[in-house]
Each structure stands twice: as structure tokens, then as C-alpha cells.
Length: 330
Length: 271
Image 1 (spheres, each protein chain N blue to C red):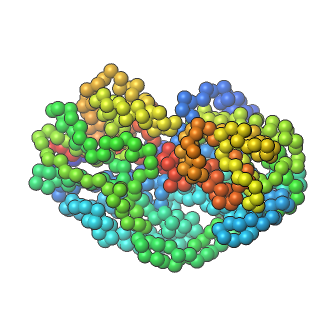
Image 2: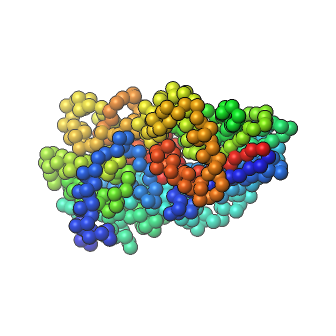
Image 3: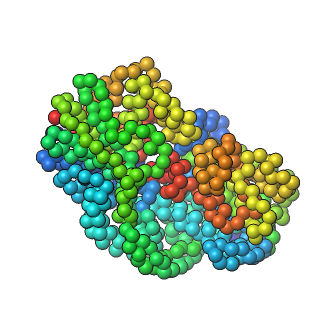
């Protein structure tokens, strides 16, 4: 396995991007944050942290099939990555609107989070969408029915795969959060002071961290959430996937909504409060009341909730109203 | 009638890409703009070009006429571009799942009447310079809060997405077809300068870039009520003199926070 410790990947010397980051953190936030347009000259970043610990072998149901949680999460993450590439595909060109990291913890290593890109991209942390398109493990083919102008057609559809279902070892979640912090620091420092939409970190887990106490984990999350561009703070969203037992808690407004569930409270404290531009889509997609606060966490979520959560976290779908403002191409 | 138009991409001059399209046929009295919707589908700039080139000589009578017209023109586009998608799983997936989408605005002159049609959130306006009156085909600023209806070869047009109407031509009247974001600028500026700030104020409450722009319009045009012609219409008209002038014009409005980031097209028709 290659050395997976965070390494500088930008063209800038470390001192330069650290200075740029320090300068950025001194810059005031915009009056109306989370409104930066995503363009080639001002991309954003998505980081997916995937729990691949042994417990992800437990069964769940997704699209009517019983499969492991790891397999369901892999399908959903692969669909999300496909969606990110598709948003950047313009004609024959794939534009650089996003930088994308896929980090696993557990799975391959008991103690340390690792980048999950493979092949020619092994060892890299952020991929551009064009690199992502070329970094598939394989492309599955399925036959599906499509409707074109009301006419049914049978077509062979190709589905790229980047993430395999893996479930091994323990849950070094702190390592993943710290790695994300390191990557985001460097990413922000290399944006040359541009008004960029801040990075979004989505952590998908089914259990508690085995490499840190709750306080240590929270301290990592606070450092990560304190990073920002002039358009807003980094968004950290956490989803705890379940085997469909227990009550689901989605985007709570207050810690009191979580009752005595200590694990849900930990996820709550780890997560970012979702910015106002997301509120209408969260309420609409999850059937929640209109409120002034939604914290970006779900506990005891089933796989359908995970799909919706990913749509909120990567607001690039062309059917949500937030996309009108955020998507790379209005 | 005579027309002139300009179009510029959102990332000009760094990138030349532009998914808007326009067609001006002064002799036939047919004008059209289309906005290939980059957020949905693929080959959308090509689709926008495909649509405007095939706008018929006569106005669309209703949704059925629009749908019949699309029926006759989608297949050649599909047959041209579908083979290009086969080698690449991403392009193939996007083509078959999202198709190609564009908004469309058309204007036809027949017997001294201007027949306009809009599908999606393009903007068509009629300005009388003598009185300063602006008639708009689609006034409601809330339309820009939601993704627009799109003409897509994958599907049938929907009644909710289409608006149409007729204006009687009077001497001195000028007409403009605008793609959405530039049209949004004109409508917001007009609302602010005509003192009709209720809709702008409501929009300004939204925690979005659109809300920020509405707020900027309210502040920027404060104290200039009644000056739409000289402050907004004439500068737009003048900017159509050249591509460079249009680029400079749109970039200035962007710097002022009055214009969102998008491809911009304006087609102006006058006596």
C-alpha cells in the first residue's frame, strides 16, 4: 500500500499556501455567504469519508434488495460521483468545477484513513472531474428501459464504479476527519484568494470512532469546520447509516430534539449547521417543517435517506431549487 | 424592421464557450434566442442552435403547434449526436437520461402585430422610448427562483412552461429578446426604477445570490425613479454595437453586482 500520509500536491510551496490560508482566514465573510458561483475559475471541493469497518457487513435494504451496508453505500457513492462528473461534462469536455476526494477508514487499514482512488490515481487525494472519469475500477453494464418522448426503448447503460464494498477492521474516524482537515487547509490555501464556494465534507459511518474519545473527535471536527473561504465555512455533514432499527433523526434543529441518544448528540455536535440557502430543499426533500435551523446530520438513517442526504450535500442535481444558484451552469 | 444582437459567454474572455444561440431574420420578420441549459443535459449549445435555426416562418399558435414543431425536429438532432455518445459512458448516460435542454423565445411580426412566445425563463420586452413605458411578456421575478422549464428532445413541452401573446406595433416601439440572466437584470432594474419595489423587496429577503442581486438593485437605483430609458435601456442598446462593447457592458454590470453569472444574449428589434 502506498504511503497515505497527507502530502502537498499543489504547485505552490507549503509556506506560500499556508500564508495564503492565513490571509484568507483574516478576510471577512461575505454579507450573503454560500452564494459563490462554481466555475472553472472558482471551483469547489467535495470530500467523502467512508466508514469501511467490519460492521459495514451488516445487512440492509436498498432498492428492494437485501445487501450489506457497505455494498449499498458503495452504490450510492458511485452514483454521486457519477453525478458530479455529469455536471462537469460539457459536450466532449469535462470541466474542472470540482475537486473530489474519496477517503476510506477501516477497510484497508486498522488505524489510518486512506485515499480510495486506485490505478493511475492511487495515492492522490483530490481528483479533478476529468481525472475521476478516468479513474474507474470498472464499468458495469445493465439493460434498462428508457422513455424517449413517451416511446419505450431498451438501452444498455454503462455504470462506472469507483468504490467497491469493503468491510474490515475497526473505525478510525478521527484519522479521516484529520486527513480531511489537512486536505481542506491546503485546498483553500491554493485558491489564490478567489471567491470560492467552501468545501463540503460528507462522512458516512455506521458506528463510533475507535481511534479517539468523543472529545478528541469533536476537537478535530471543530478545527475542520473553522476553515473557510470568504464565501463561508467548510460544511461537515455526518450520516449514520443503520440496519433500520431505531428512530431516524434527520437534520435536527436543536440538540434537545435528539433526546437521550448520546451517539446522535455526538453526531449533532460534529456537524455543521446548514446554511440558509439549503433550507428549502432540505424541508422539501425530507418532508420537514420550515425552520430557521437544520444541522447537517442524520442518525439511524436508511439508504433512501442517505441518497437524499447526498443530494443535499452535493447540490448539483438539476431538480432542486438550490441548484438554480449553486450549480456550475445556470 | 431592423435588428442587432450580441451574445457572450459567462467566462469570457478567459473561455469562449457560450451555450446561447440567436437568430435574426429581419426580412422574414422572425427573431429568436435560445439558452442551452448547462445544468441539464448535454450538447445544449448545439441544441439551442438547432432550435433557433428551425423556428418556423409563422408564429406558434399554441402548445400543440410548439409540440408538433418539436416532433418534426428532434430526431435529426438525436441522430446526429447519439453516435457521438456511444464511446463514452458518461456522455452516453447524460445524453440518454437528461437529453438536451434549452429555453426559447421567439418573436414574429405579422400585419403590424408582434407575436411573442416564451418557453422557460427567457425574457421578451417591448419598450416605447417616447413614453418610457416597458411592456414585458413575463414580469414575475419569482420565475428566476426555480429551475426553468426547458424544451428537451427527450420529452414533450408542458403547458406550464409556455407563455405567448401579441403586441400591436406602434411607431417608436422597440423589442428585445433576452436570455434569462440579462432579462432578469432588465426586469429588476425596471421594477426598481418604476418604484415597484414590492416584488424586489420580497426577493431580496431570500438568502441566495438572486436575493443579493435584488437587494443591490434596490440600493443601486435608489433616487433615480423614472429614468429606466436613459439608465438601463439606452446603455443596453448602445452595448449591442460590438462584441467588445457588449462584453464590457456585461462585465461592468457584474462588477456592480447587478448581473448574475451566465451566458448573455440580447436581440433588439426596432424600426
